[in-house]
Length: 170
Image (cartoon, rainbow, N blue to C red; front, top):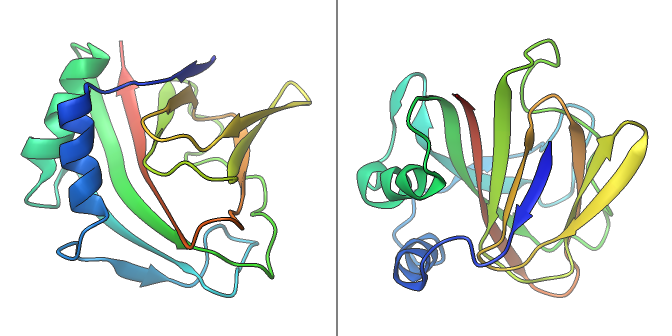
């Protein structure tokens, strides 16, 4: 299952989340590697809204709970919710294909909420075919977590922001 939803969040909620993430109060943590086999020169920055079976950031209830409600999911098991900041890297074109969860787990889903419109893309490899999804503000990409995917990095904007969700639902 691969689904793309444009204008996913109501404007007010989207603007609240986006302005916070793009602001100066975010506790970003540097990561040198984005996948096991890819190391871009800039690395990337992230912080978790939810991790290790609990909320991990003070804005979880203000930002993420309304997103779950907007999804309309009644029974949800959250694995992780992570915000990401990627700086432009003209030396590295893309990450390697990967899954966010172990491929043997068949009932988990991944969603990416893009907060930046730019020339970056998420490429999904489903049944030996590649599907390209452009990074467009307030676009949600939803797919089964066992689908391999990778990122083509942006070259047109300095900073790219998105939120990554991994979860189980009925």
